[in-house]
Length: 119
Image (cartoon, rainbow, N blue to C red):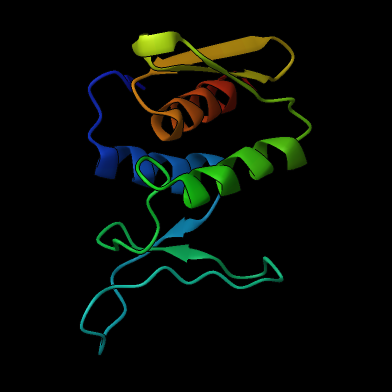
């Protein structure tokens, strides 16, 4: 998967389905805006790509959920600033997988996807 040209919305979808392992679904009918269905027991998680309620590529609270998922998967993520050059994140998935980006959110998402592709 070429992540270098992904928009934030495309990155959100890839992270939801490939990292978080949420099912991709259609927008829920009867709602003004689509939703992400996240239930605490983890039994039923649904991600609707049209939703703007969960965006780890741009929202640090959501990106931190991705970070915590990496930890649950046994990876040891790390984040480093690169001064004025953005952020570098690594995820250890039996090897170190690095991602660089202008924002910490995007770097977390890119590293998480890279690690998933190698596991």
